[in-house]
Amino acid sequence: MDDGLVKCLGLEKRFGGIRAVEGVYLSLNEGVFSLLIGPNGSGKSTLINLIAGYYYPDEGKILMNGEDITHLKPHERFGIGIIRTFQTARIFPSLTVLDNLLIAAGMMVGEKIRYAPFRRRWIREELALTERALHIMELVGLDKLKDQPAGKLSGGQMKLLELGRVIMSGAKVILMDEPTAGLNPVIAESVLSHIRSSVYELRLATLLVEHRLDLAIKHADRVLAMFNGRLIADGSPEHVLSIPDVVESYLGEKLA
Ligand SMILES: Nc1ncnc2c1ncn2[C@@H]1O[C@H](COP(=O)(O)OP(=O)(O)O)[C@@H](O)[C@H]1O
Ligand SMILES: [Mg+2]
Image (cartoon, rainbow, N blue to C red; front, top):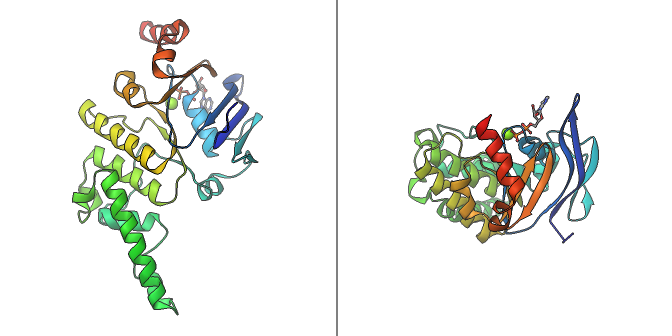
């Protein structure tokens, strides 16, 4: 197996008698946009939650940079840059887009300055953070809306703000479970293309679940297909979509 930033080694997760995830080996690499597909109930969300630390595996290990992180809690994984986004964006609606990003960096503007013995240093840090926030807003396509209250953003823009916040808080590995759910195809397309450009520019390792293959497939570098808790294919989009088992697992869902 290649040298991934994150590696899953033989993951298994059971719920009662159900093996939601079984024998999963995979690695996530910097700057690679990986798409996780599979019919309903195939184990995609469970796998994302295992990597993010919301569930612990019954078998197997998870490594980050070669270190065993299998038992780290979600906030500890957040601290080392493994961040999962949520279906409903976690934002502060009354604050501006810019302030939402600054808060994600763990810096309340103005707050710390009052107490800081080295005021100049704080101001310098604050300027650097603001510059970083502006750059991230450009990446996610929200730079023109920086002074808008976040509560006024559209559904698609909120997803982009959440992506920006995740990046701002130091993500190295981003896990997204159907981030475009409920968005119309045109907006979903724009969200996916901003995710893709951020992944490339910042060299993020990304694993994204998306049900609408037609939308997502053209953005993905790599596709992982699950069925009944197992990874049944892993490779380029063209390769994975040419595998009969992958196609059949989806056809089965449509007939059901
Ligand atoms: N918290 C849970 N308790 C019991 N069963 C669960 C739980 N989460 C998922 N499952 C079961 O595990 C299997 C995989 O579910 P899930 O990971 O949500 O699939 P997907 O995201 O691909 O639709 C399903 O059979 C589902 O019913
Ligand atoms: Mg799911």
